[in-house]
Length: 195
Image (cartoon, rainbow, N blue to C red; front, top):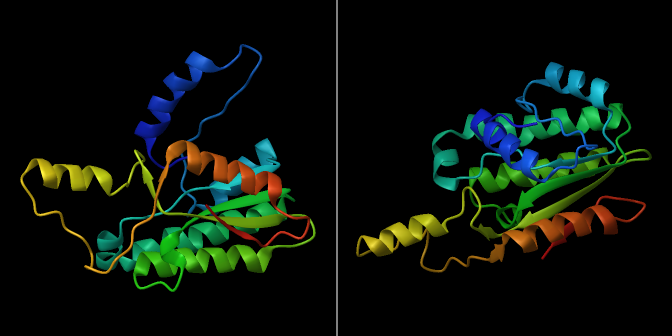
């Protein structure tokens, strides 16, 4: 379930190369801000587990468009989480960010709020966990391509603040962390996992 139709289009070709004939994989275009569509999808497919990765994540852009960060990162998460509870999804894994720790940006604050939304809905039927990522090398939205381009152009390499610390992880590490969170989450739920 993805808002970016190009991602769905490309993923469809990748999935067709690796899936077994007996496997059925449904790829859908949709927006987490569209509660009616989410309800329709959950009613049809009745998922047992939700991996929630929808988010606006570029800090400078979200400072310019805070209302969009709030609509997607907070209210989109709320929609998806509440519908997960309604349909008694067993586990909900919320993908968050290291920027949610003592947030100093709109993006970080909205992701922290998404964690709070998930923790507040943790309950008897649906167990919620959050996973905090740093910069995932090679992923969409990673800062590395920007740094590489700046280096190719002879610099300077821009950083948000001279004292900033950046934490990096590979795509396999990020995927493993998400699956570990889904597997290791306690019977109580409500945890936040960090690599």
